[in-house]
Amino acid sequence: VLFRSWCGPCREELPNLRRVYEEFHSQGFDVLGISIDDPDEKEKLTKFIADNSITWQQVNEEEGFDGKLPSRFGVTGIPFCLLVDGKSGLIVADSSALRGPNLRDTIERRLERLGEPPSEDPSSEHSPRAEDPLLVKAREATKKDGFTNGDRKSTRLNSSHIPLSRMPSSA
Image 1 (tube, one colour):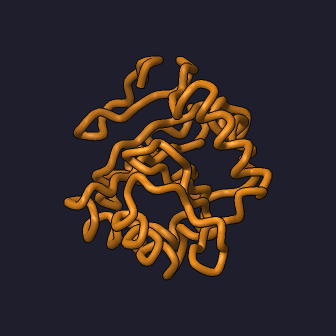
Image 2 (cartoon, helix red, strand yellow):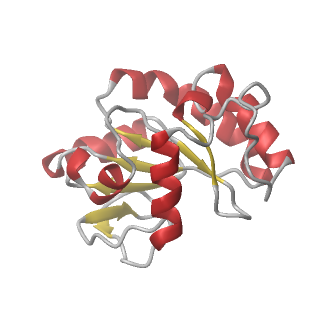
C-alpha cells in the first residue's frame, strides 16, 4: 500500500485494511506499507503508525511520487495498492480490487487460488484486464528486476517502528 500519513482517502481506508489484515494474516496475507511522506515528516509518520496501531512492515520512500517504486509502477494517486501472489510472484490485483468492500472479497478469493494467475474474465475478478497499461507496466517491472527496491533512499521502520533505519538494497 503506497500512502501518505496525511492523505484523507488513505486514512479512510486504514480501518478496512486493518480488519482484513487481522482476519487473513494467519492465512498468509501480509501488507507492506510504503509511505511517500516527505523526509522532514518522519516524526509525524512514526506517530501516525503508533497512533493507528499499524503492525505490518513500513517503508518510507523519501522521494515521494518521484521515488523508484512510484515511478516504476506509474503511480499518480494514493492510496495505491498492488496484490502480489506469494507463491507465483505475479501481481494479481490492483487498487480497484483492494479498497472498500472489494478488499476482503479479493483477499479471500486470492488466498484460495494462491499460485494461480488472475482470471482474464473481469466479471469473475475485481482485478483489471491483462491489457490494463498500469498492470502490464507493473508486471514487466516485476519480471525485469523483481519487486525489490534497490534505491538506498528508502527507509524501513524497525519492529518497534522507532527509529527509521536504512532499507537494504536487497529487501
